[in-house]
Image (cartoon, rainbow, N blue to C red):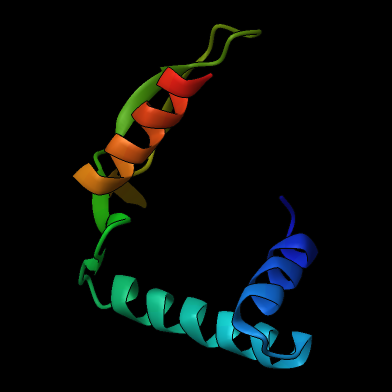
Length: 96
């Protein structure tokens, strides 16, 4: 699903205009970004948790040149799905 399809689907289910839906999604992603850059986690009941994790610096090997490179530390977003979401996904798998 791409961004346009996502907006259309939410718009249809909430009976909001596409412009209102797009503004809502933009606002939500801005809030997510602010929370994560503030090193805070985000929990959505029935969906899951997003949290910031730090990857330490490490040495990698370039696959073609076999040259060893130092990969600097970086922050990544980690998602852990809730038990409710896991159950929904597993029930969907069982029904296939």
